[in-house]
Image (tube, rainbow over all chains, first blue to last red; front, side):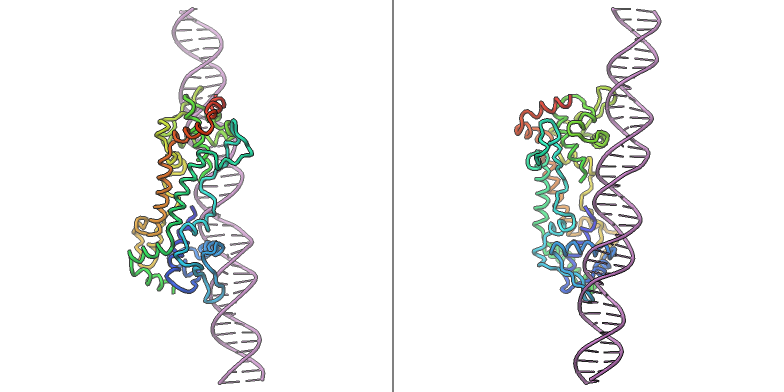
Length: 153
Length: 153
DNA sequence: GCAATCGTACTCGGATAGTTGCTGTCCGAGTATTTGAGG
DNA sequence: CCTCAAATACTCGGACAGCAACTATCCGAGTACGATTGC
């Protein structure tokens, strides 16, 4: 999985602590990340409708939706794409008694088992939102929000 | 995820239908796969203790353990490695109020959420064995074992 | 003094190289079989 | 006919290219702010 997922998730939580738009360069400065590359990841989140971008001075990125409506799965899918990690290429169609024209993703027992596992993974990620993470962090270290706001201002 | 995982899983199920060792070239011929590359994947399964290799004429690969003792997770881990797909690089340690010497994999709320999801994925894969898949296939298409044995002999 | 206009600085956005890991291939080490000769 | 040994063919195993994707960077389009000039 791309390393940008980690950066994007932390940036979303940080953005949930400030109101207005924050430039990508400042978001990157918090963790000493490559500014232009983080910008690229945030662009993908904009295309997915998670963030909104504001050009020009006083511009930057801000959350487009309520943090409680942004699941971790949304962020992962925005960056990694909707396809599963395990890709069934229907090799059964090239085997004995197989039909090359059939899509075996819904028939192959192996494909179904792998899909069931990925479904469990997606279910866990879909059940956890940016708001949940923010709440957990605020409970663990109550002074984190203020520190982040200071670093982002 | 590597495409070789699919090949390895199908090959393990096929090996569960025959007794003796089968050369990699013949296993690859069933689905028209690159023989040498499949050989590479099977070598990894040997290193993991899932398969056993027999050199020389009449040699090949055979299952080292009972099919009921080989989970899908075992095969995936043997090929992809034990590390998680989401890798926490502890960027919190480079942020405000962070300690660069601390490993945040057990403290960062984001890392914990991602790990919980991967744990659910691993649990599903660990609960499903090669024997389970073989049984499912035999129920769906009872003549598959004979077809595979013919293709492998 | 006030307003309109021009210039400037700052931001995102997409286009452009570098690097790692997956994909595919090839040849050598080792072994069981086969073949031949010798007893 | 039986035994032994050498040749042979077949297998795995690791070392060697090719390619796609991730990583990283740079420059241009567009915008808001501020300075400047004219009224």
